Image (cartoon, rainbow, N blue to C red; front, side):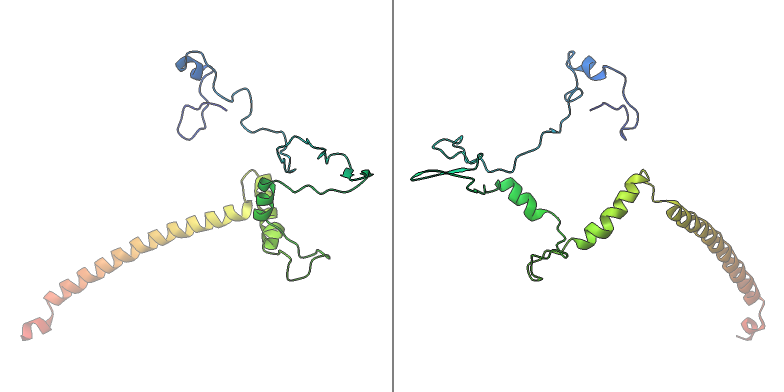
Length: 177
């Protein structure tokens, strides 16, 4: 984390600025990241610390007559992981093992078209390329020409209405009444 001296956060402040105003204490998270890089386990922790022979980490299952080796126990995922999976974007249109009614294809367009486009923008450092620049330049030039044309035509209308109003004063029609 850093301190900036301007509102748009583009000019970094001098070294030890935070410490100077906070009794020598360093800026929080200036040495260590706010984001923890250790992964979160999706295994549901039932809270009993594997007591009562419920240790499912090894592949044993206790039965009346002893242990059965390699018994399979599928631990339920945590609520956090279930929630993340339910909310995540999925494109299951090519899955063979799901029928067409239960496939989740709601995010296929997003995954196949929008994400690659966003990745291209990221690779170009936020620039969308020369096409957008060309369109912006053409729009700017046409807007400038449009303003000049509007100003010209406004002057012409004013000039013509002045000429017509002067001509109306000396018109023979005004003398007939």
